[in-house]
Length: 603
Image 1: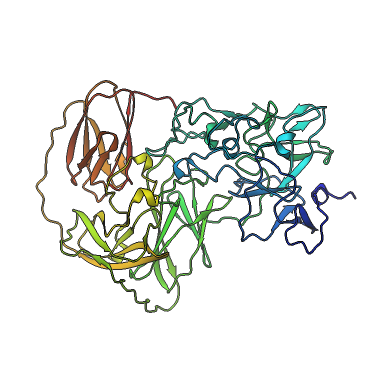
Image 2: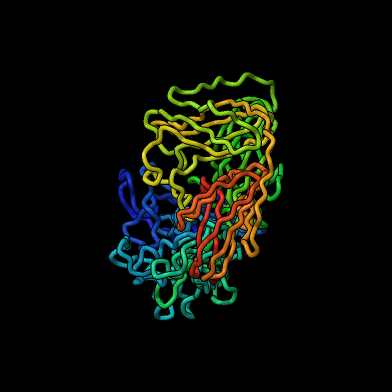
């Protein structure tokens, strides 16, 4: 029986065994089920634009595991990982270039880094830019893009699902991908039809951001090319004369073209544990197994791209029922679209888990789960408040009123933590309420930039921060102030007592005919996107719900407007005529966001 190509095609460089870092493949192990390819991840022959980034110093070697008998996915197709998706025949990782960078760091509009690092010489979507870092000469893969002489391209690697990867040429000529650029002028809708929420849109199509800048500029069109949505097809090849499914390097006119190698998902089965939800809450499910916590967010398929809010896509807050134990974690997504993290619960007892995230096209959501950790109750560890941190207790706190919690932060080496000087989590006694809040912006910024929280944007370390909150009922509350001092993240606990609400006299506002009405609710602005005719003055009528919410201010940066929004009241904002375009607005913390569209725009 002939040996399988997966065990024979690898390029090996003969060098003495005592050489610490050897190029190409230096070992191939064949087992009953898989082929293990070992390398140091680099080659003496440059691959070009599709080469993987240099390995970090901590990486001393790779062991790539390729199934010998690949099988088509029986159910949900696994998303390709955000780093290595396979291995070239010279031992260099096949890298996913589509998730390493996104517009404004939001994880919603992902740059095509292959085209972005090319001046148009080697890629269809490349263009001249002042900050290009592309190689001075084409690499091996760029040279494969030109088909000549009716020859079939060589086998250039294997994906981690076991299927081979070929260059673009067959004996009949090049095969073309089915991905095409969308007909759009603004980036407010994803290829799958998901409408972005205010603040989630990408930049309009322009000379600076032409079509092809982002992965989401493309859509798969069935029948438009020879390859399927995974960028492959079943065909006979020189190494597999009886036929095999294979991925292909996609090209157009002798240049590399999107999606280049693999698209977004594997065609075949990809080794991973099966997700089995054990608790559900809406479209979010949770499974706990030993110290592993797994979440899945379906709508109706797994959502793997959540907006980065304060530098992370998913914030997981874990709080014990007695309000003594607290943790703030950040699960990461795996190829099956499951969000995973590990946590060892410190004591037996009941815990509540709060998953805080913002889906594409939606507002911020908090989904909660209860877990009972069996065992004999134990005393909690005693927490202390470090010197230099104080909560201003000179002002009374009353239920149902806008409240500002003011903290003194006189800490050595104060540093931003998750894009803010502080995070505050507030929970009512008996886990009766929950709020995850951030300091009020000293100078509110546009909602489209509200997620940008660099050290420079934040300014010098403050001596005091204020957090806006509405505490829903009288009683005891526990809050944790999280901040970072000299590289150490602190979770500083405080307890407060909230008095009963005071009686209020209702305030009535006459809303003029034709006013544009917006509700401010615990879910944000409703509607979050409103339209107005161009060239005419108009009035915004904003009614803030009496239900607890943090929309105590509306900010329209482009107009220099900042207005208080009292609970349960309506305020009117008269706006002058505007030409066609869009105005962004937000609450004072930048968490509630909206857009006012003057005229209409094409998606």
